[in-house]
Length: 126
Image 1 (tube, rainbow, N blue to C red):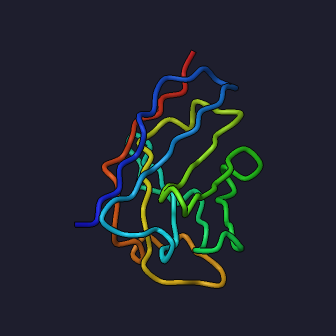
Image 2: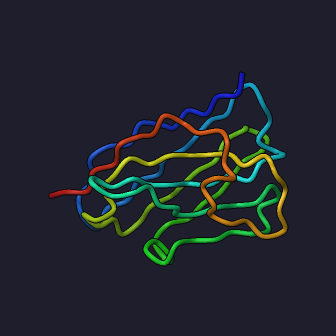
Image 3: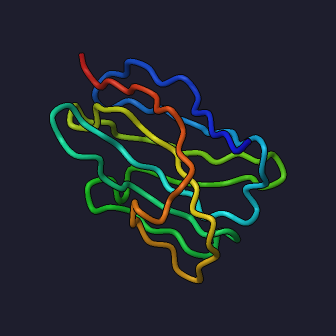
């Protein structure tokens, strides 16, 4: 059974940093494109970043570009989202998802991601 589990998020002060991770079980992440998504209160879920299977293609949403860094460790079957310079508008539930296709260039198309974690709450507030 394919399963993705995100690490516990937390409460962070504005300007702070937090890294969330996701661990896969039941399948190897080697063959999956990884995406991170966020759903803010009262808003639709949005794509934040993706990384292809080899890590040669990385994309970021404009809202997080320059502040967030996506990475993956296929040997550990894990992926990460490092978040710096956090803002109150970064508050939301963060989801890790896996897309079973191999791309030269990844894309944040939610419908392509068929395995999702349960989400982890990140709150940015003073």
